[in-house]
Amino acid sequence: MSGPVIVGVAGCSGSGKTSLAEELARELEGTHFHIDHYYRDISHLSYEERCQQNFDHPDQLESDLLNDHVGQLARGEVIYHPQYDFANHTRAAGMTTRLEVDHLLVIDGIFALHYEGLRSLYDFSVYVDAPDNTCYERRLRRDCRDRGRTKEAVAEHYAETVRPMAEKYVRPSAQFADLVVDGTESLDWSIEQVLTSLKERGLLELLSVR
Image: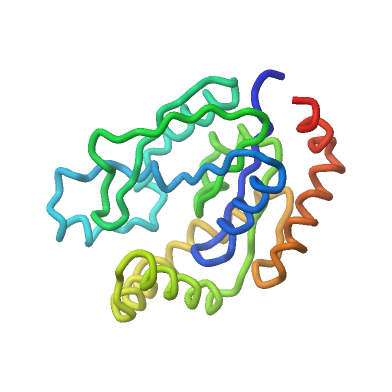
């Protein structure tokens, strides 16, 4: 096989999935790949109209392009993926990032296990589970700290779209995971569970020879 081992990591916003994906990629010297960059380009809408979009619905991602790009990476090819500007709720105009993956690609996103075409490309998949109150508190801290949102705006957004969309689309995708880990437990323990599962499937050995 010429392409990398591909691991999908999903979970609700604030579950701890990105922390796990980043640490797994670091531990195994792989590439962390966040699917949020594939939110559709809605620059033709006004900023006010963009703010009203339901970004927690899977149709907001350009899943066909995402599947195509991950398929190319799976074949050992180079891609140029879009960049997303969270502050302005649209893609960064004219900006792409060159990506070539060596031996491990860790796909991270709330919908990483939602799209059937994407799931078919994985060698292994993980769902990070965490209760709603934990996810909300983590989301609140992140959005206020990193994305300039107010507490009131985060609370309203979470109640109106994040929570209902998670219940409808994200949590059900856990059924497709090879492994479910607890996002409230230590990150080290979750990583250990993933590494054990990869070893049992012969994927760690495969990584070592690529």
